[in-house]
Image (cartoon, rainbow, N blue to C red; front, top):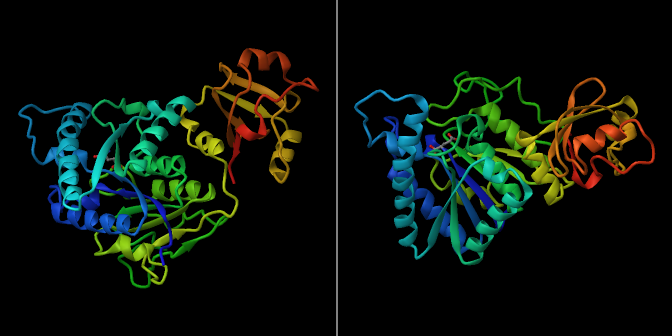
Length: 362
Ligand code: GLU
């Protein structure tokens, strides 16, 4: 029995590269074999693949020393072609088609952009084309980049309403201490409400990718809280994808168990749009309390707001802060900051952020 029928699979640079930084074609081929098998069994797969930078770095050797941005642009422009060419050839051996979607954070910044990208991936999947996603590293502006492809893959999994996000790295999962010390084990399951693993996380980053274990855990928690199972597993292990989807096997990995209350599609988009916020709403103690109780649908009314920071238009993303200045959520404004400023503190006004467009952290 298969555990999931719709999955986003993220493959990190460390899985796709050898110790010397060159692309590991054998590993790529093994992963494609497994994805082809999952496809044969009827699983919908979206692949988020890193490795462009690494693939370019091993073939282009600039004579002049480049600054970090130019180096990223140069390596990824060449590496992305190498990477996709290889995937294309490997999938075609199975009679499968794949296509490339390169994205930037900005191209997901409004609901229209977001729906446009979702449509692109949906039409690919409906026509049996495997979408292979990466950030457009060649033209992304450094300050506006995704933290890493873990963040991007979380967004894609929620966007496509998938049942699971599988993040493949070069370790077996999240350990409860230093993996080099005896007695340290992989944390097998992480449940809703108990997702703070900071005491276990090593701060060292993986060598070839941008991400680290802390970002993986943050993203995994957020996505699982939205109702999608997240698995962190070792992509260098043979047959890992097949084993993870086989419900009869207890494969070594860390599984962030999905929250039983899935978040609506629009709230998920809002949750992942925090980086585009144009302003802040600071709510008073009564409103904080009402939001914390959380079991009824509470909107943010002007009467509950005591401060507005920044300038925003209707439909812009705003951050929500409680009366003590802690950020408690993200929302889409139903009116401009100018209109909201006229109304704050007043009773009987329409909401500044309606409940349907409000995402509160757990
Ligand atoms: N987009 C980068 C690449 O393909 C990887 C980003 C990351 O390390 O997550 O090289």
